[in-house]
Image (cartoon, rainbow over all chains, first blue to last red):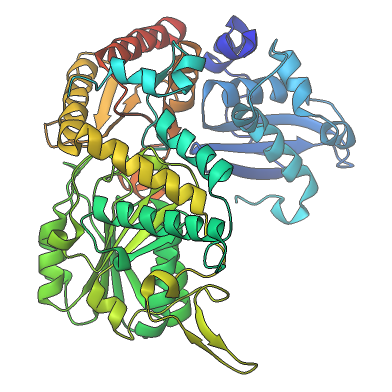
Length: 135
Length: 406
């Protein structure tokens, strides 16, 4: 067992989880997508505003309920992806969020919590059918 | 029994490896005593050969070990050996009833009754069976007290109902259902009953003959036996009828095979065992039955009840905690709760950092969680090696949750 596992709840995570960034829903979103992690009942909905050529993420808001890890990860991620190109966002790996949260490792079960927001965003950006639709 | 609690940890090698572990996830699987582990090793070192392979001594020994193990397991449940079908686990047993009984006996318009508190294992096979037969699955409601709605059951048991499939003990609520009442009510209407005893087998005495359930299922690994072995007890009269048939076919279960057809063994012990069985695991499970019998299952039951009562009492003093399910002395085996404002995964993660193994999530009971609007719950569940020390550690762990999350 590594230090991370026993000290997962460092200040950065607790702070982000208590006061998450970009919480809410965009009224002028181009894409809205929701994901549900059945294993823990966590739900995340993201709404994204894209640039006119649809190649860049301009604005993001998200809402949902989840554990401290999924909330903190989504909060960090929502800051990270603003003004990134769609291609850049799609290239983001969970490890990057892990690092941003000050962690070096995470258990496989909690990796799912950490990745839920990323999955929701990537899905929103790759699936045309979900554009402007609540799922 | 004197041995229960802390002293019996010496019989479980996992606690030699992790002396400070408070293992409170026994509803998911129990730890294995040395005698069980050793019996499996001994089987492979001294007895291993395929059963029913005739004349050589080693095969005879293995065949004997298989039948003796079956006898021990059946007798632990008060059943005749021929009433026991060895499966991989309770899930496979329930699927066996769906295939071996349901497919041929259900028609469009028939009804299966299960309950909202069931494990997915006692829901999903019936959903699939209904898709294939046109039958309908209905749910016995669970009252806010955590009890089955018996009034509803009485109102809804009619000629269309062909099966009632319910759990003996809930793995979330800790409710002990009045299965005798359910079986009596159902049998009055000529309805078959399946009892899921996965959460009951290691916690209370079961006598299948007295219960008179048509089908009773259990998992070996939740009663100190190895993973990968469990059982399906089928009433003798049903086995002798044409109503329940083998659902797995191949070697071992046949009497004679020609190119176009086959006849099957008359003895149900063989007729329902297609292919080489997991003899070593059956040997291990038989040893687990002996282990539990040696402790006296009634004493184990009292031990569980004391730990459950103590946990309920201590958790009720933590103001952030909402216990789900019965909070009285009827509760058995597990206590699930919601820590207000902190997700169950975060609670369990912090408990883990204090060497407490607890479960978080929906515990394979999504319909129950949906019914009551719980996103996820944290659950502690007890075994013979747990003691009040574990409950004290749990409370200290929960104090840490408060410290971290404020």
